[in-house]
Length: 445
Image 1 (cartoon, rainbow, N blue to C red):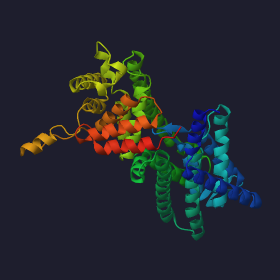
Image 2: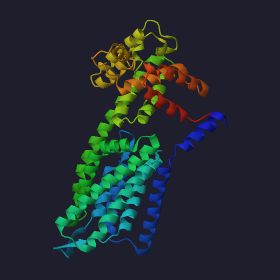
Image 3: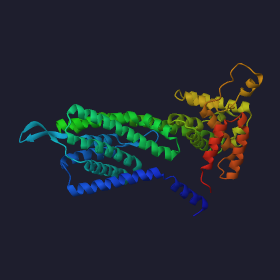
Image 4: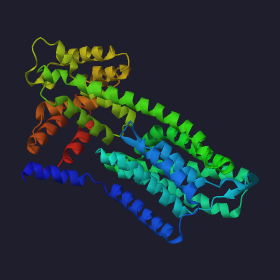
């Protein structure tokens, strides 16, 4: 095994976060305990358990990936939460007549966990057979959320509360389950991508709360309707969440298409020989890592990624390419012209105006006019610095122009020192230090 291969294997192992392992281990232990308990006492009301298990399995089969690489299974989640909140299983029947009395749902919290886990596994098997590895952390998070709801709600049924009280309790429990899911997801994401916990929580709320609200409302509808109408109600009350899932899937597809288009467009400068191969991709990765280090939100990071991928597209207007495509070596006027032309190309898309503004400002120095205004004692406020995303791209581009794909850490350290010396006016010192922290975390070869 070569040194580079060994380093790559070591890096792959180091990316397995302790939070991820703890979450999967906790879910696995819970499933083991639940299955053991159900095996000992038997399955209560097996026909109802089978219906909900099939619904959960179908939901897992049609799960989807949302923006931010978030795997969700809203139909499965609604079915599992509905089973956890189930009060009864339809009116009691005697011969051909049905009484007004509701048959109580007597399954335990352990059975909820066991049936949910079984449905998830069955629904995941087709994905495994075609080579799509399941996201164990996402499955574990959904299972733990259902377990929390069942643990909080099912013991309350022994108190025989009235329906108004039951509805309020259901609402409180499902709201708590949404925030539990968001908190667990934020903890895992913050550790995985080295984001601040507060930023990760805000991103998860923005990305998932709408779908979580739809899932929770459907789960309550399933629980109430099944109590009154029996398992047949599942066919009716899973339709709203199916419609929501298709809408979210279309939205996620549009976002993925945007990113694929931008990545393809960014390679035009490489194919044309204007920049080194991989330059745009490296600048993009550095920029996103620095943005996370500086506390940018997920939406801001997406715009930053778009802008970083296309920051050099203005070089297509040059008659003679810059040697090595290193715009950091070009004159300030040439840098601004490249940025202006690139921003104009991006603006023509009609949907990326903010990205165009980031690219346009990425050629501007950090402290334009500050020193002159201060030295003259002028009462006029100096111009504001470029946006944070522009300052990040400027630093990332300069670093990659001078380092390229070299793994020489001494060379990287020398370039960082050069950027620090220029941070009095050209580069934002905070961004340069963020770059230093990102570079220091790279594996040593």
